[in-house]
Length: 298
Picture (tube, rainbow, N blue to C red):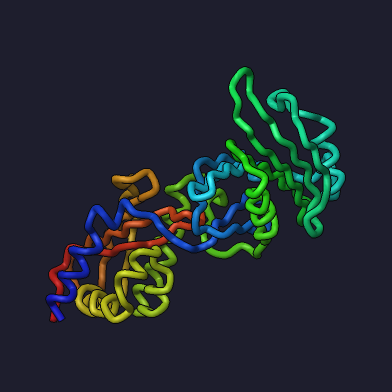
């Protein structure tokens, strides 16, 4: 039992595991005021920027699709200015935008129940860019999502990429700790860590494994995580007290290290427990390793 535990610890703490972030999990976009998360397939997408106002009712998100060379941005706000997808579409088009330079091939239409308009911008200043733009409007639970998809060096055969994005959008009830639903990365990571520790203390290692960060879940079997739990957590017994001591940034901006001092029934001194969490592509914080300062037991 001892050697598998040491193997787990050494692999889980490897820099390569911390740095990578590949997942097919959906991207989740949300703000505190809404009961849903807007989801998109996460195979090629990554969230580049997000900003949520302190009141939790307004948000901006920027995503990139490096495979298909699409840029996707969206604003979420209360549906005060328009009440339906078509009303919002017509309002955005009428308002215009100073960055739209000589739009051509303008089309207004619907994809399912989603109203959109699109156009081609051949150049920006004197620079030819052949940039296609599509604006699609969603109204859900009295909140408006203004989605903008664009692509430079556009070819007509690539139009299906835009349509596929719109068709793939889903609105799911909130689950997990989605980025943008907390005031700070530290607050979001701490909530996930606290919830995960409850499962860890209970020995619910199957569910623990299911909720791991994607690469940890893929590389390390439930059996190996059971070996880790059995060797370094089970012998300590029940928790008497646990207090958060600090939260640090990891070697990557998307990593947080959460540390506790915990008194267990089978240990006279407090134990230092450390969790490493990563903000994954789908906007949810997940644990990818746990260590403590107690020598593993057979």
